[in-house]
Image 1 (cartoon, one colour):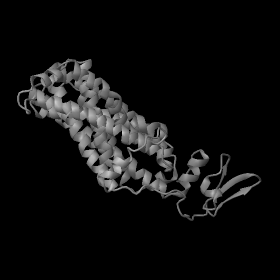
Image 2: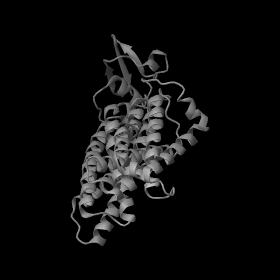
Image 3: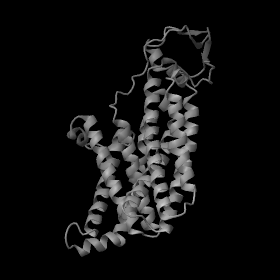
Image 4: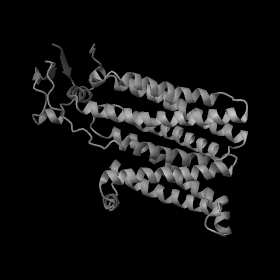
Length: 351
């Protein structure tokens, strides 16, 4: 029998009598006694459909792709192939993610109802407004790109706007909401009372944002390679962006997983999860980072390496969303996680 003193505030669930039957006060200090029983979970876990992590992923790709087009147009070489690919990737992935969000809400008008009011302290309200603002800008940029590509007929004025200052202003205006869309889902998870997410509240936003940049850069790189490739100088710029984002994503993921393993649920996870996590880190983050750091000779070899790096980075980014979501599900069903997170106890050996 182990006894865990809690010096912090008593959780609301315990004050309302919904606490573990082994939790009680002694001498002014609350103690938990692990009696081997598992009481009802004190927090209500998320009941999301299987495609919600894909919604997180697609939103990240869109935000990262917008960063690529803005960087290329405002501070890069203004390579139109990169800007074109990034604009289409940004809008396409955003539309896909929005469709999944509406499918989860059940009806499109429920999303519109979220826009009736603006609550600056509500992550859901901020997310709805951020998606709407960013969606309008991404749609405008894609429309200009369609005109520039000649798919709307002869519209020289729109084509000039797409290539000129109006297009760059649009990219600059869209940058803050794009970065918000890329990272806010991590902030959203951290704002819940699910222990595994709440414990990493300061990590999940930056982690999801770095993953958004890496997946957005990967998607843009894959698109330009499939469309015929880019100049060597442009490819190097894209590779630098991928390296920085992947290195950040890998480092933050390691720190985040170490923090998640301070909870009880991580010590009783299914056996398949550990190799899956290792595969995500090795093949989905470290391997594409190594490929992006290598100078490949020959156009065909560079193209194959670029496509392989992009595919691995995208798979790793998706795996990160699923793994983080699953860890939250398990944590919400593990009462000891809630007691430990609420009391902010030091880690305990559960071997």
